[in-house]
Image (cartoon, rainbow, N blue to C red; front, side, top):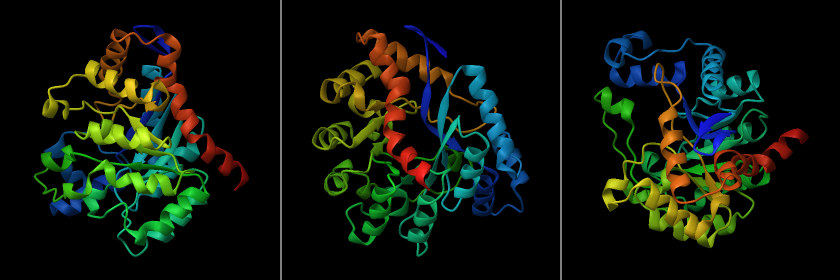
Length: 311
């Protein structure tokens, strides 16, 4: 339980990046460094051991310190499913496992199929701007069919996209925002009503479009994670953003998230306080707050957990 303006609440975090050894190794290769440890001088962050269970231990201790019940861990580089799966296997009562998939790669369908049969993986994360593809491209239909059959959550990053660690390392991020519009999700969500789609960061600058799609498609959810710097684009603040979202969707399709990622910062507790304060200000009661901060995520993942029990 964590302290909020309503008192102590149960907290589930829908958005935590699992920056594994493999993740940092990919950055070291992109930077032309000989080994992962060479990143230390540039980042001044804790670099995890090669065993992902050690990082899982670190996260559990951090969550215990802050009163966080469960978290969705996101493998944050394509091909790193095994790291998150190992963390979830070690702590099935604390973690859900998501992984980044680049559907333009020739092995994408095989990776999605393997994940669908893995009891430690619950969601697929798509980054259309990063990997330069349209959600509506028929080539990706088999992946969505798999996600539908096995009730995997599909997380779709829309709107503005920046990767802070790449910026700190001076690495180019040649993303293409032409593929970032939540409207592209509309036809896909209608075709696959069994999939629970999650748009993080309120659509990261495309709030209006996110609300349009979610209003038309009851299987589209919105996560609240990150500092939401995009609010500067529209002159908004958290109170006005939450008010607009709840006016359109109600509290039942909002998922609390922090976008936590690296140590020593650890779990981003300030996000919880900022968001809970904003929701309290607009008048949500305790029951509604528990929906957003805990129960909605459990509902989104319930179909996948039911499938996992039959695997």
